[in-house]
Image (cartoon, chains in turn yellow, red):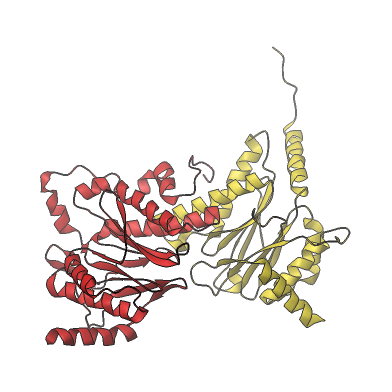
Length: 234
Length: 264
């Protein structure tokens, strides 16, 4: 019987990580920014039908980059997890922390045990009743989870965008300002400023809304909001 | 644990049936002896609810009493609930399973919307509810009947629509009005006599109140407006702008007028 070649665990993990990173790097980025009334998720998304940002529960939203089918599955699994938990206990018992841990566990398991890792990075965010209670979790393709304050970014151009966010972030922005800021951050991700800007997909978790705090901004809303801010600054 | 389930559709109810059977209400009801009638006397029953169509949508109402045998179990129970932003569900029958079904149905609507990114059309919602009632059939045979009225605004036809159900999950559309529960016969006869097509909102609200007062007049399970305690029927108005709860400020004068009329 032919023996399989020995490959060290180090090597396997490195290869998998590289494979996953490559997959993710192809996609565009998503930023989440804390603003005065909640959290704003902005994605560059040429498609108006296949969304990258979604509602999970009353105060929780999801954003994914990488392979669509894979983060779409994760998104649905998250909604199922949250709805079952909210049904069997109470709506307040659905916490982002437990959801982020569940994601981390599942994605981590797939990374170690499956030949092919998931080519995804996701954000799970919650708007708190007070601004200091906002939660932002970033879960990577290997299941590692980190929490962030103020802003976070996932996707291919994350490093450059993060630098921009770091240098320019201000607390207590209005919704329009936060949107304009997020768009600039996404543009800063490109090496060369693109000729034509990609369409944006925008989701908001608004603290003021009763019960379900998530809503989407339509293309018209986005254009108007951007116009309002740019008009004021000129 | 997140990706373990085998179910891959967009229905919350089916998700529970596949992967979380233990969470479904009344699925493991033991076969009870013929004296199961005791069970019926021991659980609270919600009584009269009704729905009336008017020009811009539909008015749905219910009284506030729940009975346990011959006792009043609650004077403040609510039997009319928002299923989502444009439809309501009103329940009559065994209160426990009824409330559980309402909760499940509300999550069902929300779950579908989140998974699919779309809202079900009114008929889709009504059919889903029929399936859920059918699942409750074994419990219904033991007396724990759930028979809701489902009503909402249909954006396709631009009108309010009313659906009634039987215990087997049969779904029937009612054209103008419907009432179910112990006082429903009386409520229906009032609705039948006084119904006019294309009523305005205020007339429809008044008619719903009148039917409930008439039901309470005859049926011991139903209670009319209780002005001394400040308890009024729940009345919801569903239009294309959403659902409006009619408040005490509006219901109190209507109630006083109707009760004064009874006095003669």
